[in-house]
Length: 230
Image (cartoon, rainbow, N blue to C red; front, top):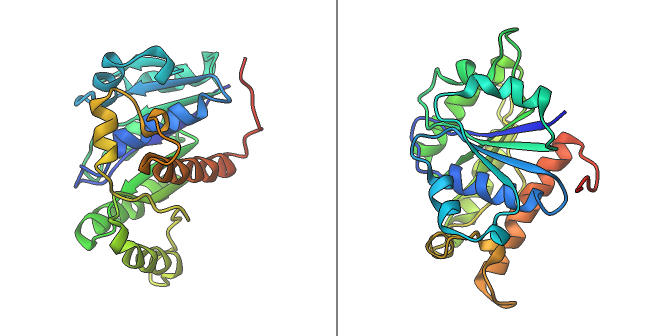
């Protein structure tokens, strides 16, 4: 039975959700059989993959815009180890309809929610977690993303504030902070992810290390084995 990882956002959008879903699928595919499902009408992941080479995207792709009800069937009948879903950009109030099945239980095993560290963007994501995600019982991970290097201290401060808050339940925030870099846009231009960008001393290697650390956190939450690649 496949493990389903959904990538969602609060109502601000533009937080790198699709890029993170694409990179997660790319890294997981090194050790597992992976399906990346595009459910976002913008189709960012589809546009990048369709321009690229198979060697850069060693996983299968399904376009499921408007068909999120198929996720339960995908889990039950899937030959995959992981299904990574790039969810639609949504306003608060839509998570329950997207991520719960007919029995009212979450379809996904984990919801990853990237967010910038600035208050306006972060507040929208935390509101979605508090009001829509946490009440379903769905495990989630908030990821501070697109953080300029000089603002890492701010991101670390916000991370600890969310983890330690007492007026509402603490927020599960990833240890890994993903930095902002134009290298991600360069990778899209080259129809690949930063994982496949060349150069042993390239800045892409710093970004790759962060992304691999994040995927390790995700795998730890899901308690996955070392490898199932067939």
